[in-house]
Image 1 (tube, rainbow, N blue to C red):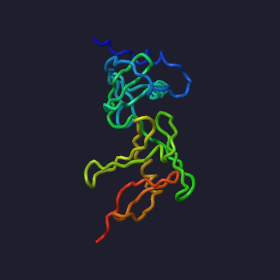
Image 2 (image 1 turned 60 degrees about the horizontal axis):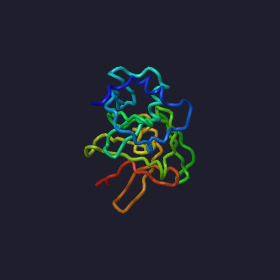
Image 3 (image 1 turned 45 degrees about the vertical axis):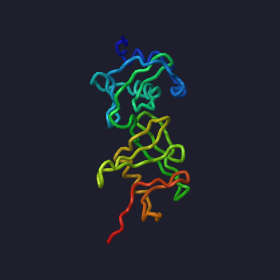
Image 4 (image 1 turned 45 degrees about the horizontal axis):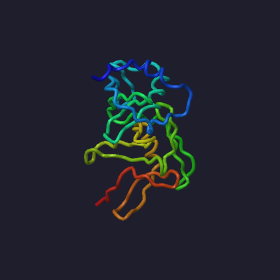
Length: 191
């Protein structure tokens, strides 16, 4: 029988404060169970239906969050592994800072949990269209198998920086960061 879900504060007490992100990818404790913890699409963290009030606790838990090859999300310590629910992406990109122009541009994103990530070969931007002609769902790879959904305001800023470029299939619209072009969507030829 699996133990009951711990209180988030009890789990947080097992973790050292003010350290670099722990090596959660190397920790392999057995599954402890499911925790009634959910991350909503807007980046709000809930425990037993109640939103977290302490930003420091959210940031601490974000540092031990991992997505495994099975597609599930877990809070992982060296001795415990608790499955949690994530509605979309676990993080939300809430700020964009752009420097440079063209291929030399550098796009730096800040997430709701304080991660600062520069889009580039190691941190690609992707845009998914779940239905043809539907609303875009833009993401940034943060670490491991974790990504951040770009807030609507950040995505609109990104679109303003975009440029059109031809490719073998027609025309593409996207942005440059660290010498890499990231497509935001295909452009249809007007007929």
